[in-house]
Amino acid sequence: MIAHLRSKTMAVVASVVTLSLLAASPSPAQAKSRPEPTDGLVEVTSFGPNPSGLQMFQYIPQSVHRHPAVVVVLHYCTGSGPAMFSGTRFAALADLHGFIVVYPSAPREGHCFDVSSPGALTHNGNSDPVGIVSMVRYVVKRQNGDTRRVFVTGMSSGAMMTNVLLGDYPDVFRAGSAMMGVPFACFATTDGSMWNSQCANGAVDKTPREWGDLARGAFPGYRGARPRMQLWHGTLDNILFYPNFGEEIEQWTDVLHTSRTPTFTLHPRPNWTHTGYVSRGRVQIDAYSVEGETHNLGFNVPEWADIAVDFFGLA
Image (cartoon, rainbow, N blue to C red; front, side, top):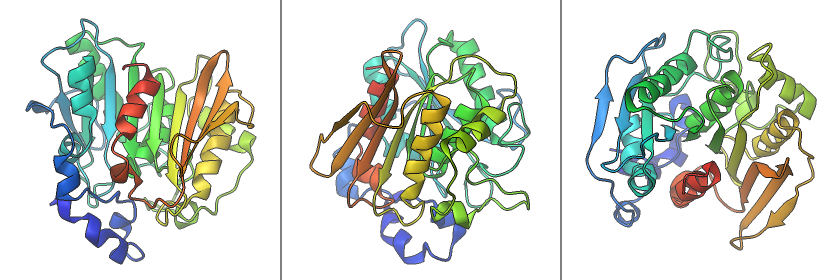
């Protein structure tokens, strides 16, 4: 059960790839403290092109806007869409704010999203991003969703996929929130492996322009607006190491044409450093560094969902 994974994660992370990206689950006491969404998670079995066989789950609140926003919530390795439904606050926030939530599941062994293959790092490629975008288009069509308000968020493997989707499909997503991820294409491999130890260990160091070119190169010829990005990382993360946070900031400041010097620096909590990078009168990159936190950050700070939804402009 997901509630029991947290205590096991750190003990085996060094040798087991499928647990290497696991964001450990909350204790039963933590889980009980969260508002529970109403029942209503539904699996959709036919939603469009889906080359890698992802599963789709959707949550439509009882009170939904006439043209609702769509938020895609992506799980960690060994996780699932239903686990993110029950283990995060996004469905409860959908009840409050009238948006629709899509929870993809990666059923392959290890339950990680493909953020490594050439086909995953290409607009209209042949892997997971295609299926996830099909889910979005299905919901937009069936529920009269607002194409100007489509967002994506996730933790660990899901955070890496958030970076990938914003590179592959800047025409679909308006913003993302990545909880403990790595830059677009940092995890790239060409040998069929889905694991890149050099990236995971924070050892891939590129210039902002090099990172930006990788993200822009996913969709050659695209000249439209680029989605904004929110980033989270714990300084003691020993699964996707903390240097990846700085590399993400370098990538998205280049893509979004902001200064690499923060416009503001705040400390909303004693161990939080919140920096914002503003361009065209709006925060384009919203970054949270959390001192002393490990790869458990996503569950130790459950209100990140509220902060992400606020960043999306849905609150």
